[in-house]
Amino acid sequence: MIACALLSAIPAVHAQVSVTDPWVRATVSQQKATGAFMKLTAAADTTLVEVHSPLAGVAEIHTMTMTDGRMQMRPVAQLPLPAGQTVELKPGGLHVMFFDLKAQVKEGDMAPISLVFERADGTRETLEVSAPIRPLGMKRPGH
Image (cartoon, rainbow, N blue to C red; front, top):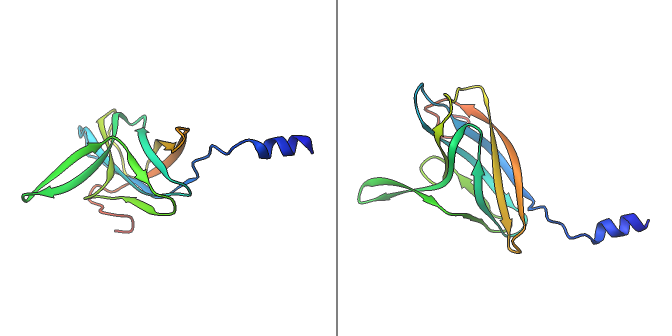
């Protein structure tokens, strides 16, 4: 009984982020970069601050915008996840980029991805995701 009371008194550090529809775009031989896409929903205000995967030497959160008719892709240091709102990482918008791929990323395989979230109090949590690798020309799941 005392142990239960003590456990319930410990503040929860779980970011409570749900990840839905994760996927990674397949590559061709010798290709050195690809993207990862998913939907993120946090129960409380949280920020995605890091991404890692053994597939790549470098993983970054990116945004893609059109400026003067040119598509520009730029890294962002972090991605805020407002409580209760789904933030979609998708082709042509916010996404994860993997650079310096260690091998070809093949359709049908699974990609391990580590997402590091930070709460307002500075507490960090890593969430491990296994994302299916989808065909090269795919724009979103189901197509």
